[in-house]
Amino acid sequence: MKKIYSLGLLFGVVLSTTVGGQVVFAQEVITIQDAIDKTLKNNLQVKQSQFSESLNDVNLQQSRAALYPTLNASISQDIGWGRNQVASGLFQNTQNYRTTAGASTNLDLFNGFSKINQIKQNKALIEAGKTNTEKIKNDLILSVITSYMQILFNKDFLKAAQQQLEVAKQQLNQQAQLLEVGNKTLADVSQAKSQVASAELSVTDAENALAISYLTLAQLMDIPSATVYQVQAPLIDSFKQPSAKYNAEDVYQTALKQFPDIKLSSANTRAAELGVEVAKGNLYPRLSFNGNIGTTYFYSENPLIVNDSFEKQLKDNISKGIGLSLTIPIFNGLSAKTGVKRAKINLMQTQTQEQLAKNNLNKVIYQAVADLRAAESKYQSAQNAFDAQKDAFYVIEQRYNVGLANSVEYSTALTNKNKAEIDMIQAKYDLLFKSKVIDYYLGKQIAF
View 1: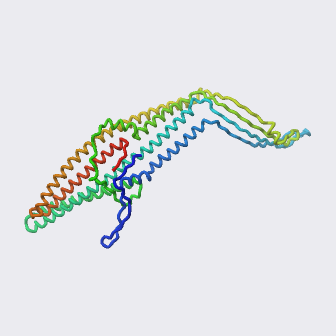
View 2: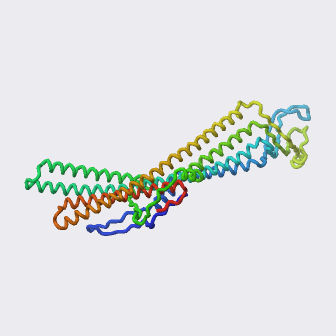
């Protein structure tokens, strides 16, 4: 399981402060590692897969025990009654009692190696079960990271939308003031109102997107959907720009050796191959050794019959026997041949699934490498745009300080700078995320 460590672990503590005379409780702050831990602990798919692992262990124990001889004991008591001739030559109703006890054993000497191959298959299924659990956990980790980053994106989008709304309101106020002195028309004011309405809609959309992203992560962690929490943003300034110089084919060849999806499909194929051998065992003759021992006690009320004592009869009536049994399959409704055909078809299905898993891994890795390179280019462009907006704001700020620019121009320049900064941060988040996706396929620890 790949662990993800956040930079600076925050504990979810509840703090209180006073705002407007009311006590306001701080929301729980969840780090990326917190989110992953909660998800892996609570997710029912992980638990189901672990239960399947336990069942596979039980199946292996049973298949190993099947190699040992069987041993069974039995005891029976019979009572019979009816008319029987007695010493006087007359018939009268009598009762008979019979007690039988015995034990038997059976051992397969040869059965087409079905039992041996069944043990091998169950071992392969155990490995497949463990790999499936690992796959589920890895998929969940990637989903958590994606959802976590989406919250950070949406928080920045909301911030940008709120800033744009503030500028639109200032512009509307300015247009209204100019209308009063006759320098603007009602059409100009209406246009400004329209911009405010559009900005308000953008804020509403951003708020909804943020709420949905919080809900998505809560559902992944399997915590109550109504839980209110915050996420900790990585300290972007402390990160070094990740390298985007990856060769897609090298990444793919490395992933083939350790990626859970491939390991799972390979284990399933191995289990299916052994399944064919298990099924073929039913086509061979079966040689078994058997042995038995038993004794009988009999008592009758018929006066013509002498009833020895219970102990004497048990001793005198002991019988023993051993034998070999050879069963040759000739025709059994084609069940054996049908079983082999079914096992071969299942093998072809798993082989196809394994190849599909490899093909899919190849596609997603090549796409991931391309996405990483695109994210690197986007980050460079966003960084250049932020530098340009920062310089432009500096000029407006100097003009505003000496009265050569009004408050709307200043607010607009500030908003543009802030938006460019948010775009740059988002581009860095995206670049960071895309690089961690490559680490995910390479089997590296994903650290923030």
